[in-house]
Structures are given as structure tokens and as C-alpha cells.
Image 1 (cartoon, rainbow, N blue to C red):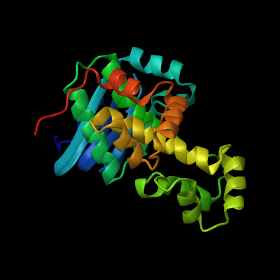
Image 2: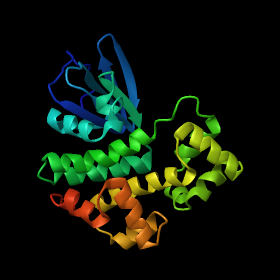
Image 3: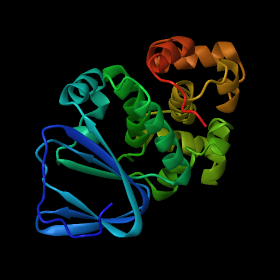
Amino acid sequence: MTTQRPKNLHSHDFYELFWVQNGQVRHHLGEKAEVLSEGTVYFIQPGQQHALQGRGEHALVVSLCIHPQVIQTLGTRHPELQGNLFWAQSKLSQHKRDIRQLAALNHAAVLLEHSKCNALSAEAFLLPLCADLVSDQQPEQTPAWLAQACQAAKDPTIFRQGASGLVAITGKAHPHVSRSMRKYYDQTPSDFINDIRMNHAARVLITDSDPVSVVADQVGIPNMSHFHKLFKNAHGMTPLQYRHQFQSNLIQPQG
């Protein structure tokens, strides 16, 4: 992308999602500008004026334009999105992805690029990302030790172990962790971990072709009956139904 300072800001009548794939970029917002590093993800609502400027020759940004009806429909179907991401009170919402998460995001974007780019394909791309980012939001006054553990639990090496994995990284007794989880998250440790597992499984079902039994084992639930029950409770359909609905218009990239 160009390293020249933009002459003017621009706005648009669609929703924009962009992320910094490589290097750094300067994000101009009216009177101010901010430097964004690799892995920064930005959700921008229609009407927001901004401009991007590369910092160095290796700066690279991936940008998607999304029809307002897609966002409105998602927000209606999933009330928990309200106040977050495209649905934030501000016209801007900024988040961060680590190397592993950025790789998954780029892979999903390649699938979207090779799809029919219709509403179904857009939802297949957006839902796993939105679910991950909304789950990153920590309740107010959450103790630092618990917030850090809940964030760390998104690592497959942790959530595959189930609730015991979450409890272990807190360094505290199981009853204390359970009481704290109920107080601040209104969930048991098992419920919290299973939500992470099912979001991860949903993303894998869309982006990969592994058998459902392999996906279940990857998230630490080899019991297929239990996995199907958890997945259906989380997503309202079986794993195969979910894959067929959201992967039907996507093709795997070559090479």
C-alpha cells in the first residue's frame, strides 16, 4: 500500500472490516492519527471518515466491504452482538489477533474470496470471528487473575483439557474458581470452556474438511454423543448440518 500521506479522508455507505496483515500502517481519523501494528483488526460503520497510510514498504492491509443488510440481519439474529464490533455505539471498534488467530482469519478470507460472495458466504466468514471477539470482552470488575485465565483458555492446549485446564492455569482451588466464574461470567467453568470449544469447532467445520470425529477430538471431546449435544445446544443444528449450510458455497483454495 502507498506510504504517501493521504490527501483526503473518505467515507462509505457500507460496513468495512480491515486488518493489518504485515508491518505497520497509520490510520488517519480527522484531527488525529494512530499507528496500527500487525494483527490489528478494525470494524468501521458507514459514514466514518478515515484513511490509511503504509509505514514502510512491507505494510499490507486486507479490507472487506460488507453490505449493511448482512450486518443488520446478523445483529437481529444474535442480540449478544449489540454494543460490540459493527454494532458498537462508536463507529469504530478495534481488536487484536495473535499470529495463530491472524493465520485463521486469513485462511477464512481466502475461502470467502473463492466463494460466491453472497450473504451466506459473508455469514460463514463473520460468525466465527464475531463469536471469538465478543467472547474476548471481560465483564467489569473481573479480577485480573480470572480475566487472564479466561483469555488464556482460548488456547487449544488449554481448552482441550476442559474445565480442569482453566482451573489449573488460575493456580487457585476449583471451588473458588467456580464461585468467581458464576459471579463475574454467570457460567460454570465447564460452560465457559464448552462455549470456546464449540466456537472453535464451528470455525474448523467451515474452513477444513476433517471428519466430525476428528474435530470433536481436536476440541477435547472424543465422545461423539456428548459433542453432538453440546454443538447443537450452541448452534441450533448438528455439526454436519452446520458444515453443509455454511460451507456449501465455499471451495478450498488450491496450492
